[in-house]
Length: 449
Image (cartoon, rainbow, N blue to C red; front, side):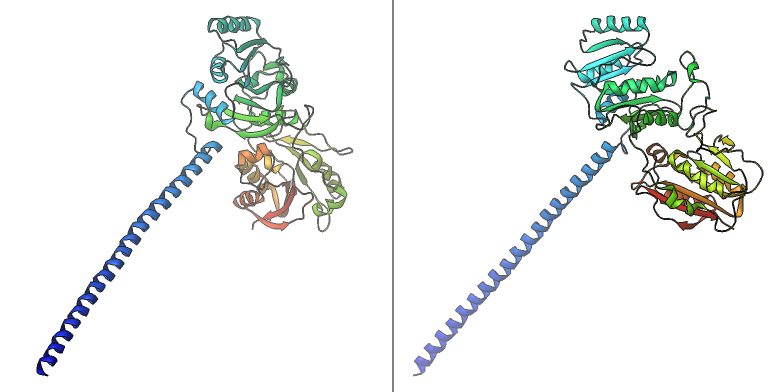
């Protein structure tokens, strides 16, 4: 019996030892399992972080590429040939395109264009001097460039084949035009619908050389970008962009226009302001009591019709300020509405040379967006504005961010930009008016104490 109990105890101890070893083995396996899980998680996290990092880098790269396409981050080319290539590439043109080099001269840009369009494209090298055209012909034959076609043009027509050209380009040529409107219409007809017009010239900003256009053909006077934009728009071109980021010099302006695809004829503004009813809204511009004593107008287009009811509620004769941003000749004036007689002054670097008497109302009617010299003009107005005087701004609303220069050329402006400039000039917002048309806004300001 003793032996049986000993045997049982020995067996039981052995069984317990075996169970213990099993449990230990299971514990080790359990720990090893979780250790492997933790290793897998660590590796997975590293892998996931790498994937996220690659994704972020790709997104950043695509954003940079997009901004470069828009021109905001593009490095300026180092020379003229590179500038020409950058412009053409930016416009999505290249091999097989048709390009017209207006005022080609000795062909400095022509040969670059020939290399860009290759043998399948065409370069019209236009000039109005016959000897230059002959030289271009000889040089094109010498270089074996069949894609170059020298062309004798006129001062009012480059004589391009109709609806043929993808890009009309001119470099320091526009300021010599004595008949710019005729030339623009002829260029419009030579472009394909959707084709581009690129003008490189100077000066940026407003006109400085107030000379008759007939004198420009034989003498050297710089033009202004504001003059080019107005004339191109009124002759049927849509303004696209300022493209100086693709040009190597710092003093030139580079303006890109387009022949609208749906416009059937030149000589028509493709981006006209919407009409509104003067009869329905003129009361918004009248004095709350009494009459205006000395109203001042800075008005353009159809909005000048508002001058009639406003002057009917004025005792003084008023004044018409003509913006240098608009005028292409020193004597040019916008037509007055029938029955209205009004003295006018042209601004000079924003200074309207106002007479020394109080102003009780100023009306910017479809004109404020044009201003290049807003600070100076607003400062002069504030000096003459009566303490309770009003300043009205009726203009076309821009729904996208624009620089001051872009606002002028696109002929629309963000209302917040107007409010900011007015605040900086010492005015406070009194009233936000209703929309006179879908594209318009109306703001009324008063003079800060």
